[in-house]
Image 1 (tube, rainbow over the protein chains, first blue to last red):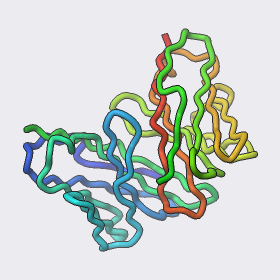
Image 2 (image 1 turned 45 degrees about the horizontal axis):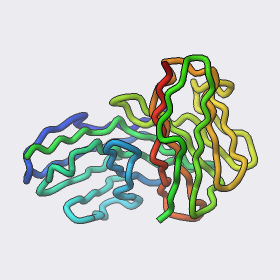
Image 3 (image 1 turned 180 degrees about the horizontal axis):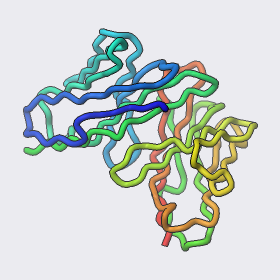
Image 4 (image 1 turned 30 degrees about the vertical axis):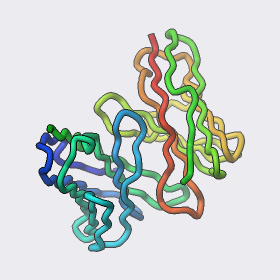
Length: 112
Length: 116
């Protein structure tokens, strides 16, 4: 059974801290890994990772994939209260129709 | 970027009634759309894959007679929750896959269903 596990499930930090969110996956026909940020409504796309070892960056956020060890991390530096959200990772499986298998998410709370 | 809309954004209904949720891709054609359900503090769970012009593919444990999916055109998929019960109360999100595009699914804003 395809599975994506995220850790920690929740995290509380102070503004300015750096956080690392973890995502491990076990899926058949893995194609890529996606990170999303979910606030009150539907998830918003952050990163797509396909190749191992290549860091993707967007401002204070960065992410990397390790296809050998089957995990990915999402780093957020100099956190701000606006970073408070649930961060979801999802593995894309390739096949007739490409499905996303989501983890349960990490709830990040950034306190002022 | 690609935009997906959902309607309604929230709905409250009585137990036993049916509710239809629409998912539209506004600026692209989507041969495949996905329907997810998210319970409070849980992740998104894929319910079914909707393919234009053919029957939807349901995930294990999802009742196809209860959750009717119609993908009548390349820009519209509908999910009908039939004979809704309080346990069907959830956040329903659709996404549209852009064939040949990046590996991202474009998510709609979601529909909050509350069944009394």
